[in-house]
Length: 263
Length: 263
Image 1: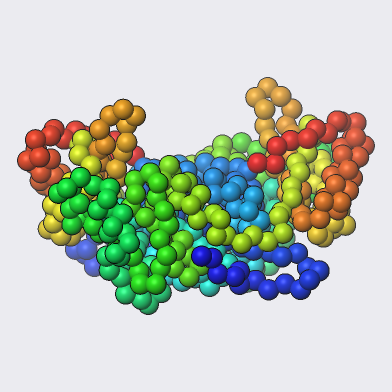
Image 2 (image 1 turned 90 degrees about the vertical axis):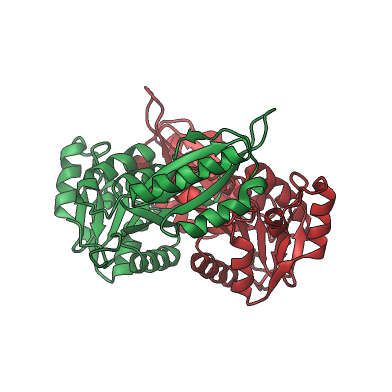
């Protein structure tokens, strides 16, 4: 079902596969609903060897959806969208994605059959049948929760916003994803503020160009301020060496480093 | 401190002022840290008469930050950023924003004085002094929590990612924001699934072009599925009429509507 990733790499370079997430819905931008899908899919993609490089949140406005879909699908290997595929007038994602691809859209016979089998006689209203509208040429994404399917067209995967449905849809499509070299990560905490370790940490980053070193301060109520350092890279030995060097650095300040959760 | 909004409106049309939020940081895209600022600022902006129209999350990569800043500042009246203004090597927001604007950047004397007064003698390390780097021509945004300031350049407001600091910085700059006509909202719930009310709801939306009507399903454990309808608009009387019509619609199905929280 998946197309080959757009990235091209030589035999020695790490194989990087990228993705973007597009959250569609006024309710997220108004603050009424807190997005619960982004952090979840980020972890899922990381496990699949796919790097989430950008996320966007746009309102239920056709022009905004089309622009975002076209920019993101051109820039990344995979795009995942959430929201706007229900039965009401403000659910315009499917039609907007069809326009972004310049293809037609109509009730899909496969999706129609799924909804026919799901609803009791007389309950498949014209409004609910809108949920069977799928752009021409798209593949369906199974929805084991409430049946109305998502779909994939090109490298864009269109899913529901309700988290329980979003997650099940993603699990349905996950076997079709082709990941790159997995991004390994380790995290080490220390009871030192960022400002104390920033200079030698910067020097460490310069020595390990293949490792992405992120610094995140933490504040414990009543405790000393500390910092968690996250190391990410595709080569285990290099990653471990960078971590060991950082631990030695912390000890040189008279403090004890500790392993922390990367996620 | 704020410039006039870019939107121009005639005397009768509602005065619409727009904003975008740019979240900067690998830790949000990896799922390690859940963004806590977006929903908060969305509500704050709504109260100020400013509509949050788009949000983006980008990694700590200079080209990605520059591209997003330049696209968003051209498209919206206000841009707010979070993250990447600490003392470590991966804090590249200030330098990236300077490049986006095509201006230089250096340690700002005003910011330097603030940090000098804050840190005990000898503690203002070169790394910490990086937090005083401000693009030429920018105004400082006060940080009552940890002192290192944010800044505003053009219509872009650069703030810290740590939520307690982000919020205090926003409160510091809030008096400078010029909002448009406030977006009024009401929400009404009913114990009817979206599919039952979608058609008459769509007709209601067509009759009230000035009101934005959003439909959000809810599922209560063990209860019947229901829907919350959110009405938004700038004219109170029109908003109330649309709500009254929707309540009558719910009663025509033999159910009782109930007022719900808009946020």
